[in-house]
Image 1 (cartoon, rainbow over the protein chains, first blue to last red):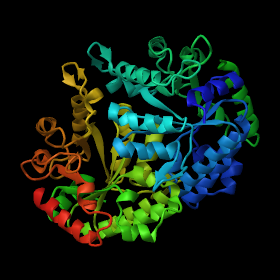
Image 2 (cartoon, rainbow over the protein chains, first blue to last red):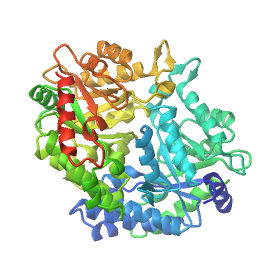
Image 3 (tube, rainbow over the protein chains, first blue to last red):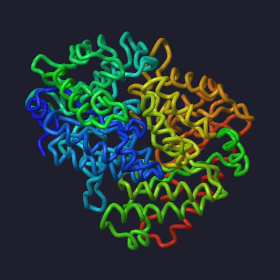
Length: 298
Length: 298
């Protein structure tokens, strides 16, 4: 498999948009027609409702955007049945030509980190046999445990031409409480970003961008611009656009002059732009998708 | 359900040991007899091998220790089948009177954090109905995303009499790269520990200890002693004892003078003290368990 950064650059150029569609299903927001098909009798029923809805989202966005980003928490909240649905959705996304970022924000040490990474990305090897599990193209990871905890994720990802996105400056209002602490004259998140830039530089793609990206919220435009300056060869995954309050102009600060380097995520804005009672919910999604693509060009 | 801190204090007093048994199954280390029953034909087979082994561990440690700590990564690495096995093991642990800490190191924001927490702890509520998912007594969580990302976990846990353990100073050799960065004259992990002490103080149990614990590795004895001084009313979950190099004397620095406040985890040391070809592997586990309990009194 070609390196993640090259596959991502190709897909972003082809679709000419930096929009990434987040798959964050919530039962209460699903269209009435889907909820009527899958009433809340069990978590299996909820998982199938998520599957029916998200599967339709994948069909609607295929060919229009480079990447979709399923949020693992909502599938995990349905137990094993939810994770079976997640597995099916990731398989469907691949078959539709979409790249996938699994938003798991995983973090652990040594062989435990490898277990998470192998499961999310290239597959788990046991007694010499490799089995795909989630088989995503990239995984979001949490850096708090330190460099030797991040590195097993990078090794696992590279072995399979996959990528990682390291949390640096998250989109939530209270993210600064630790991320902005001043450490030797620079905030903590700048130290993490510097580590990411070094990891990313170890295997640059054809565009110069590496396979280790970072996460920075559109809700922090000044930091976004500053990080783009400091880390010219790092992919940025930008949450917080739309429903969380970040605008397109802010989010586009993540783009490099060549139009690459940014993925701006919209979850609710693209996938839930309708009232649950609205029968023409697919039309509302198409319109929101068109608007998102127009607002977020390469 | 009684508050987590009180249930934990009762169980630690009753068993008179601070030993916590980690459930981190690795196929290559399993007894030959179990591997022969479940050859590596699929991840389902691997998951069932983990289930057979871990189920026996639970029977062997029940009544002897207060808590077991399954490592979610190894079950997740077997896909949905692995998570079904995890669910069964957590149920079995409860029925044997063991408390459970789910080691997931989860972290996310807002309703996503709530989804992880509800799944791990008190159950997921959809359309007014609550469904248990992993149904553990406590969950490990990662603080990097900030206070407003940790708080949904605390709210969810408290609603159900459950607990959380926040990563502060992890046991891996490279943990200091961010955790030890000097921020306003104190290392980052001290800032996190201070936040944990405040959260924990919001709902003290009968012993004074609260329902928000922290994780500090036995591999950092000086920091462990310093944190025990600074956070007298916080439960400490201490990995890194045994196989990772921390000794009993170091780990016991986590105890308060009243014998409470510490949970010292051993995974490989108690659950894999045998060669895979050894037919009397259960005897080896019994001996290792007796030794661990003797070395780690309240």
